[in-house]
Amino acid sequence: MFLVPVNRNLSDLSRSLDRFFDDGFFGEARDAGATLRSPALDVIESETAYTVKLDMPGVTKDAVKVNIDGRRVSVDAEQRKEDDKKDGERLIYRERSVSRFSRSFTLPQEISQSDSSASLEHGVLTLKLAKRTAATGSQLTVN
Image 1 (cartoon, rainbow, N blue to C red):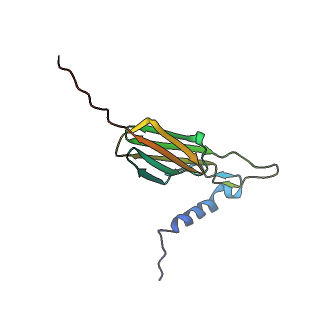
Image 2: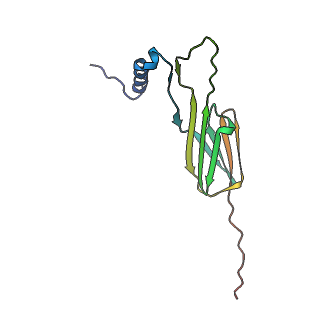
């Protein structure tokens, strides 16, 4: 008797069987559709800001939406691939049609949206999120 590892290769086996028995394998092209991915991120804190880096390969900066609500930050992106087949070619199978990313996280301190910035370079989204400073105290006059 031998043991079959089920944790690593089971998903690969399942995917292979799906591809084999799929109608698109024998006839028309099959589009695997968009898979929602949660991008890996790094958060670095300084005294005045948080720097957040998210991996978002294949996404253009126009496709990225960053929402800030107090301490909560949400990043969403959807990038559709253009059809670039040439005359005489026939698409058999496609897994790269749509890239979708979504990630939300809460930071320890509220963010100042007006002082924050975002940039996308080489598939890495970098957010510089300025911490909201507390309003300076003032004295009330009692009437």
